[in-house]
Length: 191
Image 1 (cartoon, one colour):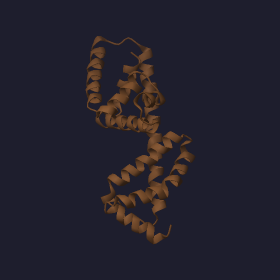
Image 2 (tube, one colour):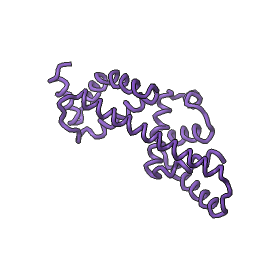
Image 3 (cartoon, helix red, strand yellow):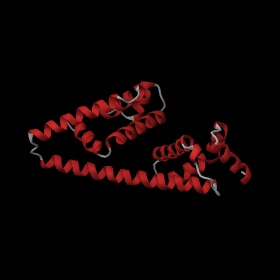
Image 4 (tube, one colour):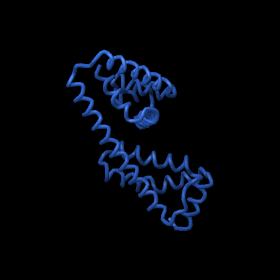
């Protein structure tokens, strides 16, 4: 695409023009998805990350910087999102391993068990505050252990929609709880 047209679209996006956003999305989706997949080797994760980038662009359109290279800006933003996702996944795995180690060491006092139950109740209240369909999808996946495909079939939604709802639910829960929620969720699932 001609440089002037790209920058015109970028300016229009910054002004909140939905049509310009869609054009930029169509223009860069495949290239960014290919780039993300090359790094992750996981298509659902690549799709979620690129989709998250575009959601961020739309939500923050009025505060986007002026850029010389739109493709360069988008690739750098995507790379940073991928690095954050990899870091978060590693941190998550570290917490799970630590929790499993603590559980295996056993001998939990009554006070620890009561504190864990209180935390579990708080977590349930947080989950109950999720929007209706998102809460249902979260329960089906995390509590009933249904796969994304099974949930999609049961609800009539696409698998990508289910993945998006799960991802958004986890982000909302983590935003409220931080990484402490990882320990509670793992404990809860192993009860």
